[in-house]
Length: 138
Image (cartoon, rainbow, N blue to C red):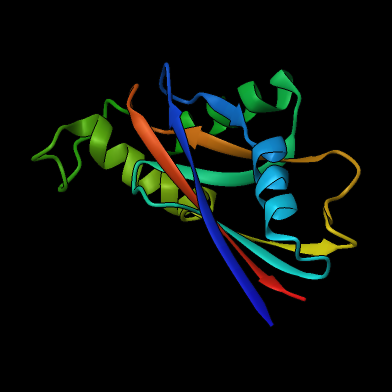
């Protein structure tokens, strides 16, 4: 069994920004030379997450609208010592996937559904983000 780890560094531009990182994750799988196994994608943040979604701005906007209704910024949160947007971002992270993905690797390629893409989703404000990609297999 082989193991390979690398990371993706990003600079986000705004709250609720979807950044498609599919090609960058695939590049790391290519570098690993692992043909069959699994790739773990982890955003080491409580205020950003990684998700699988279609690369379609309409579903991104729909998701944002629903999440904002569920976790509004005009609510008083107990976890507000870092600000309401921080508390809301932590809760959104939990609802949307908690920062981790596991994706099969088959024949050296990410084994995704027809329309699935890998995204980092910014839930707070513009900042530097790091996504760790770990590939395990043969």
